Each structure stands twice: as C-alpha cells, then as structure tokens.
Length: 232
Image (cartoon, rainbow, N blue to C red):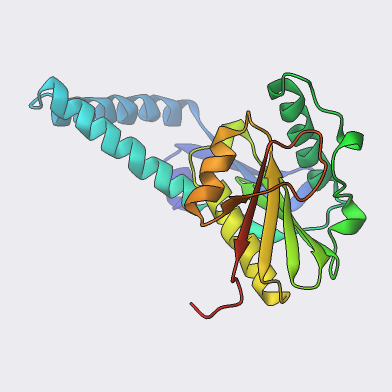
C-alpha cells in the first residue's frame, strides 16, 4: 500500500535517523490536496446519513456511536501484575495520594494511614496491578496479604481520563482472582465517606459493610467479602 501511494506521488518516506528499522511516511503536496478531497467526501457522506433523521434519531445514533467507541476503547485496556517499585507504579500511587488529598476535607497524609508499602505488595506478601491504555498506566490496585486466608484491597485508583471504561471493575475481578490463587478466602477493605463511587463498586461486587477492623484515621466504612475459595 505504501509503495502504491509513493508511486502516485501522494506520500514520501525516509529512514528515521535515530532508528534504521523505522521509516517515516509523510504526505506530499499532492497528497495533502487529495487528503482535503477525501476529508470533504467523508464529511458529505456523514451529513447525508444524518440528514433524513429527526433530531431525536440523530441524538440516538450519536449516542450509539459514542457507546461503541467507549467499548472499543475499553477493550484496549490491559491489566497485569507489575513491580510496585517501578516508575509507573510510583507515579500512579502518587496520583492516587494527590486525589485523596484534594477530595478529603481533612486532606491526606500517607504516613498516617494503614501501610501498603511497595515491599508489602510483592509475592508472597502481596500483589500490585497496573492498568494500561494506549501505552500509559491509567490505573492501579493492590492486594495485601494480612494473615492466613485473609487479604486486603489497597491503592485502588483509576485516572480521571480513563474513567467510565469499567477499569475499576476489572481491577477488582483481577484482585479477586489473585486472592483465590493465593489461597485467600476473605477480602477486606476500608474507605473514606467521600469515596461514594468506591462504596458502590464494592457493594455491587458482594462486599458487605462490617465493623471497623483497623484504626485508619481516613476510614469511615469497612467492607468484607467471604467465601472466595468456594467453587462458583
């Protein structure tokens, strides 16, 4: 395809000076003119498809297209176990701390809360997950193994730019799968009263509110899910 475009003098290519394995392709002046024509035809086609529709139908079509785009974007998200000491992990945790500081009326000081240091989040003591989209880390979550058969969810965060793609749900499911593999039957967590979306996430995943199990000064709600080791 590239050779055909070059033969029509629509594009030109050259080797990348910093990497001989890469070729840079750019439009020629003729190619730019052709691009304008194709862009106009594309716009005209879109307009012709929308013209017969009423206002409510157009809104319905655009909403459906946006939903398809959202689902395709969500399908590009990957979630993997990562090194909690890595630059990406540290950046995500710092972004998480900063968001808590901004959302909590009392601010947030990491040293005052229950610990989940990187050394506590490496096997067999725990696990750290990173979610990636378009090559960038956009979310994280951690599993801290506290005692025989008991684990705790920590560091659950999704970047504002990637919210609405179901990443938090997938992080919870991934943590639970890791917990099952590690022999954990009970998962616990605590959360702040301002994090209402987090409470909804855990409630719809079967976490029940329980009495406080720690003295975290930033916690107002404590949750627990039992029976992870039961088949099904």
